[in-house]
Length: 487
Image (tube, rainbow, N blue to C red; front, side, top):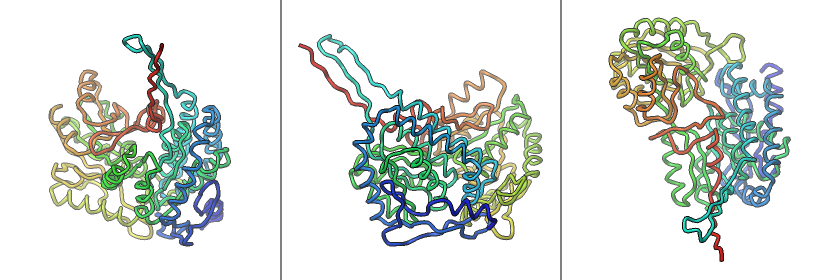
């Protein structure tokens, strides 16, 4: 490992962060963190067991009352200091993320900036939590409405955006006055450990944030969900896991925020700006190597322009450079693990067997690491598995449509409803289609929807609740009504 890479990995704590202290797992176990570009271990981190998880919850519960009483301005200032520290250390943090997750350095730097913005946004929201006062309709009493922290929270973050998905949850929890136990994905724990260190440096009190790294997430988190002292779960990950967590949360009637899977349609109408549509397709499909719940998963292009759009997309994707994310000029890094490569390969093979035409790529890269070539498929039939399942890789499946109704019907023909993309210069059509699409977010003539100042979330099997924007802090607040009698 090059010296700078070794230094960046070495300086990150590798233990559990409980009640403001770094400590090993009680059973002494560790598990490896693997560089997906080589398949080799970068380091070992503490492997928590159920007893460690309960200790983390103990710390969060013990800190809750005092933390809830902190002045909102002070909570906001902690986030503001953490925001600045993230920006000050963007190069080291980006390299760390690239090493454990694989995305190119330019994208990793972009994620650090994106992650920091959640802290800045919620630093400003901390002082804007309000309530209400009203006269009862009959004039004989008053209504007093308070907003209070929901209490200790359980946060579970995914591997694909290991820093931003942490700040998107931690930011509003801190602003609202909630304590936390957070479990990062076992594939990418280093970014969260580095973030915990930064928050401690920014002045976050002991016990407010507790970090548990583990290779046994179910065994560690289920007892905390069923414990009864935690009052909220926020999870970003697969729909299958989200369903199981929702069932577990029912036992204690936990507040739940779930940001789950996606199957984003990308609609290109004949009147679209084709240059903008191709550029948007590259962004929507290939951000994070295609490993994003917001990734364009199904391209529907109107027949009149389908051939030209497809040719342009093939040209752009064929020019992408595959390699280790630390190398100059690399635009496509590795997938996260061998299972991811196998899944993408299986989806492409299935589509081809059902009649899709392979125009580019279509295979894994030989050698070390978990790389898959940028791939374009044409004439993908509706019964192909990739029309129903998230691809999570650099694969663009294209289908043709004739009418607006046909496009919208195909777009909505999925159990998911996270995001859709629409390209058209017809304002009437734009409004009609955006209203009819069954999803929580729409990218209209743009291929990127994520923004800390906007509400992020989906409908149907893509989840519950919203993160970010003015409503993001609401997920961490309870509303209390006080009936005031007047003599």
